[in-house]
Image (cartoon, rainbow, N blue to C red):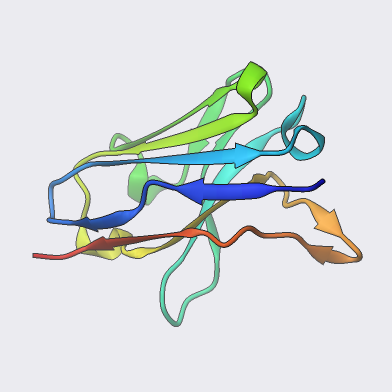
Length: 119
């Protein structure tokens, strides 16, 4: 069964931290590159952090130095540690393969987790 379940979002003040988790089915996670994506209101979904199966990471410039992506391969779990959060980080955050997993000709997405940064 294909599964992507994100959790850990919430409301946080600017400068605060959150840790997102993603439980993925092995068919999606195992031996593949993974990523965290986000979609802010009125904007396209973007890849913000990526990690290879071996653990090499890459980040979009806007989150470098603040976000850290990691994975636990034997648990099929992906994480995103977000520090020094800014209002512009407000978005729904999704995990997926990099590039996204395709099922039936369309990219498959979980429900995402809402992150709101506001005072």
